[in-house]
Amino acid sequence: MSQVDYIAPKEDHLMPRQLEEEDVNHFKSIVGESGVLTTDIEGYNTDWLGKYKGQSQLVLRPKNTQQISDILKHCNQRKLAVVPQAGNTGLVGGSVPVFDEIVLSTNLMNQIKSFDDVSGTLVCQSGCILEQLNEKVMEHGYIMPLDLAAKGSCQIGGNLATSAGGIRYLRYKSLHANVLGMEFVLPDGTIVDTLKSIRKDNTGYHLPHLMIGSEGTLGIITAVSMSVPSKPKSVNVVYLAVDSFEKIQLIYRAAKLHLGEILSAFEFFDAKCRDLVVKHGANDPLDQPYSFYLVIETHGSEGSHDQDKLSKFFEHVLEEQHATDGTMSTDETQAKALWRMRESISECLRREGGTRLYKYDVSMPLPIMYKLVSDTKERLGSEAQVFGFGHLGDDNLHLNIIIPENQLEMVDLIEPFVYEWTQQHNGSISAEHGVGMMKRDYLKFSQTEQSIQMMRLIKKAIDPNNIMNPYKMFTV
Image (cartoon, rainbow, N blue to C red; front, side, top):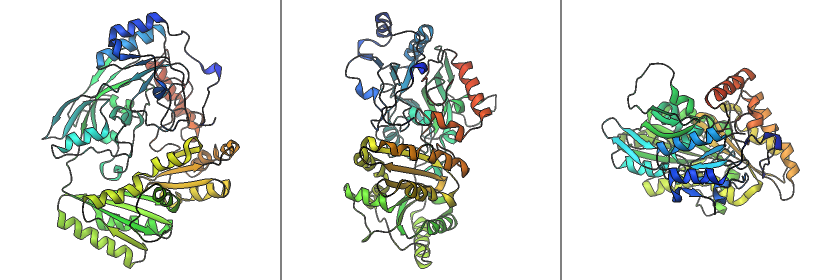
């Protein structure tokens, strides 16, 4: 299976009934005329990279949980397949149809239900855009625990469904750690309300955690309650140039030792990434190119204390010659400019590579992380462009490859090589992007057959008609 315009085999088509006019009229009675789209829906059928394209003829845009319940109840009775779609910023083909599945968009489910500025508890609908949520809670002195390059368009429901990680995982941990409760709708239309705002509830299975990372295969997340951290009073950024990946590891160790509790992000990228973002308009604050770069951020509550700790760390890594060059932010504007060097990489790669771009999101032990990039370069030769960047604090590597024009056969050198290499080095083939269509047939490289079978049992118990995002994650 390749990422490019993937067409599933005919025997995979599980929708036994075709969409009929009576179905469309029924949906109109639920969400109204404006909530039913049948034209100009190519954007809903195509993923962010333009690689996966479905043939859905119908997009539904409900505004509330009851409408989603009514929609799924009808789809389950009629055995019509449904693809839940949030911001459609995913990178593994999980949020678009494979065939003619109905797209259920949460774009209109964008209401904040409540925010408690004492406990820092946010309750919102699943279609809220991450950046807008962050702006809202910042008004009360808080921030969202999740920060992604796609924050301007990704939705919190999609973040939950894929168990997104982001650049501040190191400080604020996973969504599993921040979610307090959830409301979701099962394939038969049953509304499950666990939308509690308490931090401790040890009464049975933790159902919200089953939905986090389920990629829309078990139901649709409609609302969430989350604990959000206080907005740091002090934010500082360091930008470092480094000669080797071995020295990066020394700097990471020093950062944990010197910065401790205020360390919030530790990001790296290689020279290829640096050259690419500079080509597309970013300004590198350093005078000359180096092998590797780091963006290190701190969040704290005492400005002078945090600045002192960071200055001592900065001096230490330069004096010990772990870093070759570097700079520190002096204000918010400069901090944003330094972050742009890291956060613009994905968008620049998309502009540069288009459908020739292949993205791999893996995790593995830190000492051998960059070896995958080096081995891939050696395997593909000089004609392919290979880029490495990622979240060092949580062992997450983003391997990106742009193959030459008219050399699709090179994909056979990439897949399953990347997944096999990752398995051999005790890693995971998906650190934060999910499985979707792209990695469905490679799940065995990260999960045992017993684990996959358990997933199938859960799927069949909750979705016996297999209407929820079929063809994704694993074969049923």
